[in-house]
Image (tube, rainbow, N blue to C red; front, side, top):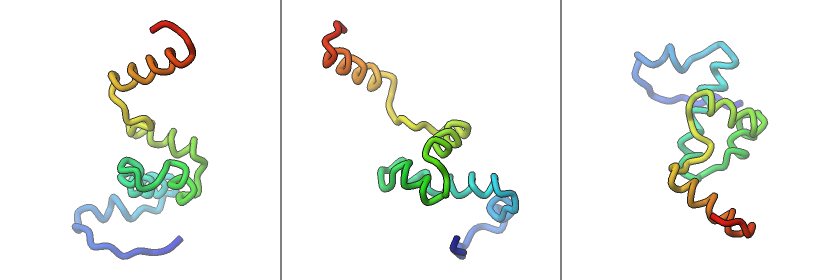
Length: 91
């Protein structure tokens, strides 16, 4: 681990300076989430950086209501239709 100094409003210090290991993991996972969402890093790379298994990170984000798949229902239906077509099934 490396210590990093950042300037933050005084009011949020109690929420980011944490002693509890699980709370630290959540905080750090939240720090990398925007980079996953924007495609800069993968879930696998983020998990590696956080010292977690990928499935554990995905599960953690799920508990925080952060999606693994970033698709609308319509996009999901389109993907399923393509898969069915590729398998030779009728849509």
